[in-house]
Amino acid sequence: MRLEPLSIILDKDFKVEKKFYFISGNEATLIQKVKSTIIERYRKKERAVLTTIEFINDFLNSGGLFKEKKIFLVNNCKGVEDGGLDNFRNTDGIFIFVKENSQKIKKIKSIFLKDKDSLLIDCYELDKSSKIKILNESLKSTGLIIQKDLYWFLVEKLDNKFALVEDSLDKILKLNQKDITLLNIRKLLTTDDSGKEKIFFFLLKKNKEIVGVYREKIFNASDVNDLYYYCRFFCQLIIDSKNEEDYSKKIPLYLFREKDYLIDIYRKYNSTKKILLLKLLSSTERILRKEGGLSLSSGLRFLLNIKKITIS
Image 1 (cartoon, one colour):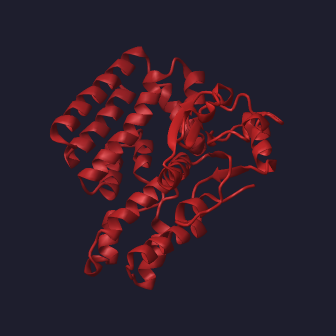
Image 2 (cartoon, helix red, strand yellow):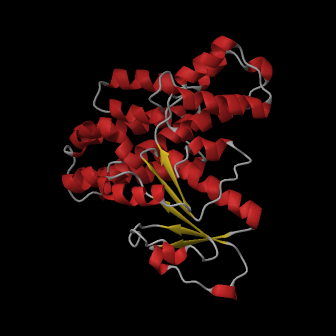
């Protein structure tokens, strides 16, 4: 059985209970939200205990030794083949598999799709209808009323990544009713659908352009911290990769449009530059921990220093 991810996240009375859950797709933040939602529902309803195992065959049926309902989070799909789930149908507990899309898991997904005790949940970037559902549910749950033009502005401008939509709506819903204006919403949202992380993709532009897009998208300390963690992710990817092939494999699937650009960035790095990048991350991290966050000027300086190391 296949189910849309928003059916699980938005439906507080979600009652579809299966033995096996397979969560996949290419939108990592939505995958994580679905996983955490299922786990929390079982924890709340049945006081289930979460256990992480590497392979499903690592599961040990402890019989009556444990009274708790168990949630088994399985890291690897090895061991799941036609008929491979049968050995676990009568065990106490549920099994959750999480795996981003790849050619290797097509057969695995078909097994879960056909299995009567399984639920397949594909997570992709949000489209317009999905953002409407999320916005409607948020407004309904808070009782907030917004003007029609502002409603459609939000639908168009909210990001396609679930975590960024959730973060944006959380900021908006904390405003007082009188502060729900187009001007205030513009300040809270990025100016286009790309999100703060896309500032990293301006790295090879002129400093004037980098400063311009930074000022368009970054308004407060929270934005700066978000940007830092986005940039740290991309930088750590460069530092940790042994070579271009290794780096290419580590690029998340949802960044397929930016893959060529990221590879161009990686080609500018040698071992010396990687050390400099690591030192920059370490020094910035110390400031962040000491001050509890980064200022607007610190964030911009951090971004320009990454560029300086990259093109040097």
